[in-house]
Length: 90
Image 1 (cartoon, rainbow, N blue to C red):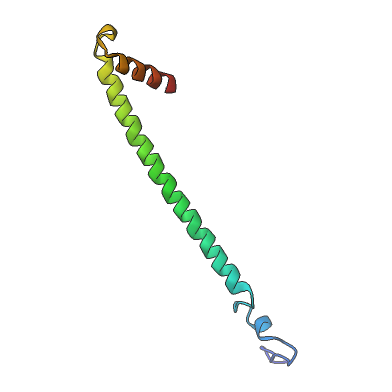
Image 2: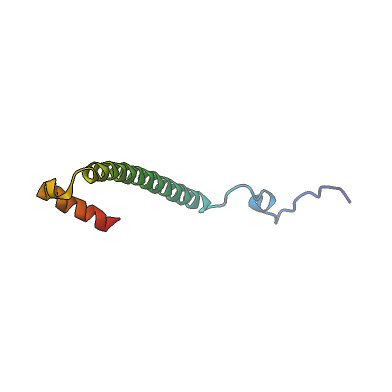
């Protein structure tokens, strides 16, 4: 018996070569590619949002330190309201 038997006429090309996509697999691969790209865009957007929030928090922290150096009775009314809101957030 030969080491590599020859395929019979009933064997399909896709059965002999399973790495060749069958009909319908192309559209599935395109859909998976689209989903992967959507996920990438989502992750990239989340990263930008986190970075923006981080910068905002750093700015708020610097302002709080600055406000903390001024006696409370000398603060502007708007600054008092803002400082109160920031304290509640933390």
